[in-house]
Image (cartoon, rainbow, N blue to C red; front, side, top):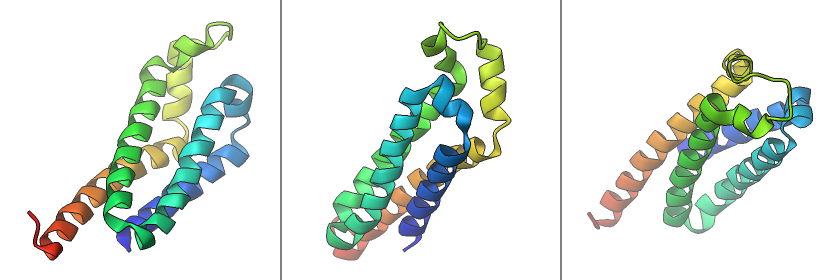
Length: 130
């Protein structure tokens, strides 16, 4: 249940960013499409937790790792993809680090990873396979 809630929070924040961050769409539309993918997979994993819980837990952890890596990459290397844009690396990083929704989504990925690992270990103990 906790993992489902974290996934739904991740999807909600992702949806919020997609609908409110016009700079995302104008400066980095490919990143917006990536966020759409992450958001859709978040929702699908909530459904997957009911059908194939162990698999969905593993995929949720991997998704959190992938999204955390992508977001950290945006902070440290994001402007490398925007060379035709006048945005400097420092300005882009400052923009992201000043965006409360971006930072919230970043931390939700950390929580997702931790909760997913705990859920996986707990499910293994419950089934007696350790």
